[in-house]
Each structure stands twice: as C-alpha cells, then as structure tokens.
Length: 398
Image (cartoon, rainbow, N blue to C red; front, side, top):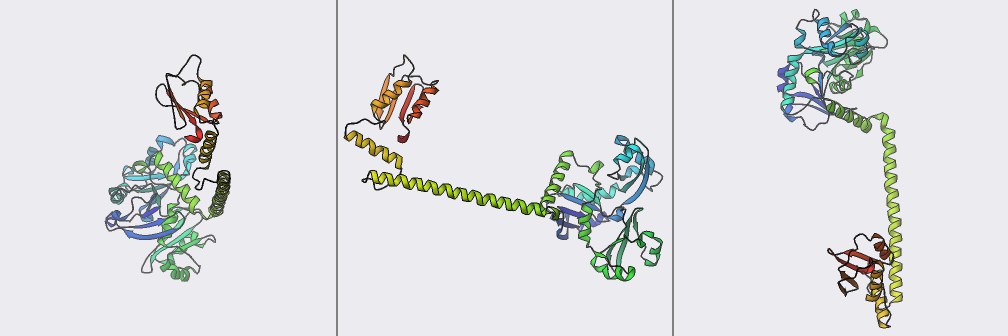
C-alpha cells in the first residue's frame, strides 16, 4: 500500500509528496519524493486529504433524500452556509448515513475545494498513479482525540470530537473553552517533538504518534472521498477490497495464529508428501532389485541389466527357439490371436512379420474395440499404421 499525504498548497506538489509504504498495519518506510519517483506498482494507492483543506458540517437531511436526489439536496442545504458555490466544492456525505438519507435526520458532510483537489492530484495522474481512495487526515470522533503536530516553533493542535474537527488556538490558555479537553476519555496523540510540551502543558502523558503513523491510521478511515469525478468503478473497488483483505490476512496481528496454523499445515503436508515419495521410491527400488536378481539368477549369462522384463522375455524366446517351442511373439501365436479378432469375411491382403511384429494390410478393425481389449489382455498391442494397415506385437517388445 502506498499512502500519499496531499500538501495544503497545490504548488508544493511539484517539489514532492510525503508518502508512506505500508503493509496496511505498520509503517514500512516513509519519505518525500516527486510524483515520478513513486512506484506505479505500489498496490493500493491512498491519498490523505489534510485537515486544513476539509470543512465538516452537520446537515438535517429530509426523508427520501437518497439516491440521485442526494447531490441536489446537499447543495440546497449547504448553499447558505458556504462561502463558495457548491458546484465548485467536493461534497461527500458520511458513509454511514445512507439510512439517514432514507428516513431523514442529521449527518456529517465533508467539503473541500474541487480545483485544489484536481491540481494536487494532477502530477500523480501524469505519471500513471491512480489514486483508489481519498481519505481525510482527521475526522469527527465520538470520543475526543487531541492531535498535536509539528515542531515547538511551528505546531498545530487539532481536536476531533463529536462536534467536528477544530483547530485550537496557539494560546493554550484559551483551551479551557473547549469542554472536550477536560473529559476523562480524552486521547492525546503527539508527534515526537511535541511530547514534552504537551506533557508539561496538559499534565497528561500523550501517546507518541508520528506523522507517518497518523497517515497510516487515516488510510483506514471509513470515509472515502473518491466520489463523483474521482470515483472508481466496480472492478477497481472489488480489486481494492481484495487487496485490503489479502493485506489483512497477511499482516494483521489478529490473523497471526491462522497464518502460523496454515504454515504448520503446509509444512506437515510437504513432509508427509516427501515421506510418502521416499516410501514409494524405496518400494520401487526394491522391486527393481528383485527383478534384476531374478533375471541374473535365472539367466546367469545376462551380466548387464537395463530393462529386466524385456531382457527376460528375449531370453525365454531364445530358449523356446533352441528347443523348438513357440513363444507368444512368434508368427503362429500372433496370427492365431489376430484371427480371433478379425471380423467375419475379412482376409489380410498382405502379411509381413519381422522383429516379433506382425504387419497386416487390407483389414478394417476401427470399430472392434472389444477385440483390441482382448488382445491387450493377452499382452498384445494392436495399433493402426495407415488406412488399412495394422501392426500387432507383444507389449513387452514395443
């Protein structure tokens, strides 16, 4: 996953984007680089919209305002609350407010400038990077969270709470006006350079969170601002969901026992297959050794064993010829076997016998599957060698 932090100013995009490479659960590395240096094979690409470029507004949706009517309804509700024309703004409704749009009720709306968003994404699109998701850096939260960012001489403090996202004044003495800062469930997340100041100012220990970690957390937001002209098709969304699922299975701590279990199971399967292969190989080697031993003991004249069954058959044929006995590979037995499967009324026009192979011409055995099966059961192989030419030979002599 490639997470790109969009700059507040579109001009800053030409000098480089702060970006994070992540497995979806931890920061692998982070840096600043121009668009051309970012990998076009980065997997899922998520762009984080800075908090300074987003406005958060509550709207009262009328019943049955969902579907195609929703954009015009939002424009009408926000027209008197925005300084700019709603047509020039990118307006996104809370992803959990679909039911509210049907029945009516309050919902959050995120608003940012369309022209700025086009300009800041243009360098990425120019180098072939397709941003699949647009997520807000910070968003409203039921439980208050204070984010303290930057350096001591140039810092920002942003409060995310149930009433929205608020940029706090630099003078900490004015923070007493914000009731959320005194709540017991307040979470404080500070960048490394601000930890000591936050601790001395609020007398509370903050959680350490770098900018890269904040962007990674933002990339997991339920808000997806990639809508309207920045929307992705169904195929891209399906691919993104599959990528997210794969990253979760591969790296999420909750799935670690499953990954260990699968790894152990695969290792056991590999060991089992290797053991079975070794056993089968040992049995085959023992069988071959037994055949070699039988051949050498029966025919001491054979000193080099290459193909034991074939050599044994040849030695038996030699003995049969020596004592005048016929073997299964002689002409008479093979003619008798062929005659047994020839259709009635068919007689070969030519017969040729050489090297224990009987070749006949002028017969049609194409549809005689049962005859071929009977020959195979007798250790004979019958194959076609032309339109009306067939070759019969012992399987061991092929």
